[in-house]
Length: 148
Image (cartoon, rainbow, N blue to C red; front, side, top):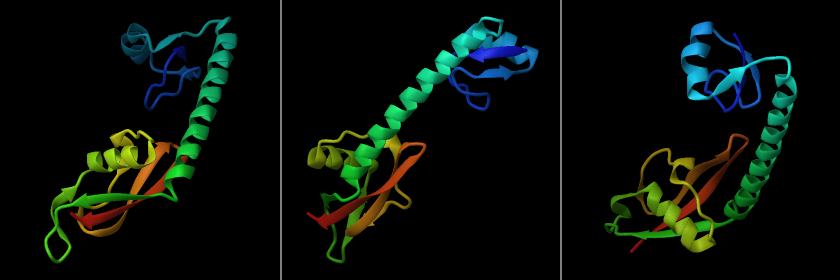
């Protein structure tokens, strides 16, 4: 069954793609949910306009992510937390605390789901947090944890 995707479908394709799928998958899932429409003769023009708008939106998202990355890479985000005498924290610094500190110190609001901490931050000092704002834009945020 040949279909035009109206939205991104994991493992199948992106919006505007003409795809060939199994009849049952298309008839029972993609078509009823509105994720796709049947490919007919007039659909090719519609598919190209959908791909063009997708590409323009993707380019705008990438440039916005690169702009945010250019501001956050040189910045050092300072967070204070309760710590023992040896620099060991009572608990750990959460991603939510990092996002709040980034917003307070730089004015840039991030989604916490876009950040990834390799190991929990449980000591004072400098740590790196990975941020992926776009599939092509990934960078490190420097976090300086000090004892409160």
